[in-house]
Length: 254
Image (cartoon, rainbow, N blue to C red):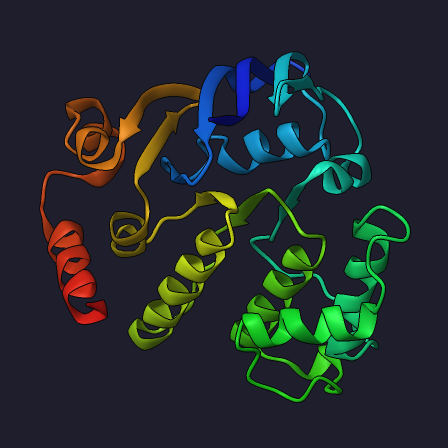
């Protein structure tokens, strides 16, 4: 079942084309890795889908509905949520209050009967390592990423975008994130994840989308895309270090 597709999605900033006619398909149950070199347009592509920076042209189709250009709050209530590369919490709010904000404003009115209990459940789901009463500005990067993920899940998304969730994590923390990603997909949520850490990409994704200079150069099953000469040249490099690390990480996780 197709849950999300883009058709010739394009985003221009003045004379710069940051995303150039990218078409892709996300299926129910997918964990799709969005890969490409720095500056390839990955986050811009997500921003165009979610309405943060609406596309210049092209279409976004979500569960058969054309949602092109809808603002982020409407996209969220329709079932698309996201984390950010750099988490931006409400600094003076507690962790539970931050998640409650997403619970209350990210869901259609009246759908969550007990926002506190729902928010607490989200913190538990992502295995938030601190007290729910901790003030957000006191958290480190890893803790903020868990909080950001709990907020994203609080709106009960059908599709979750994860933007470099694993950056700055140790190998042990990567294993923890892998487990949480599998828990998320177990809830029936499809994932599109931007990630540079190929160990994680190869371990959890079933499909990959690679873009370079804003243009799609490959889409398909992960092994097929990872071994595509165009992708290797653009992104993975000629050595096999990352693939070896990926295999080691999968083995350790199993």
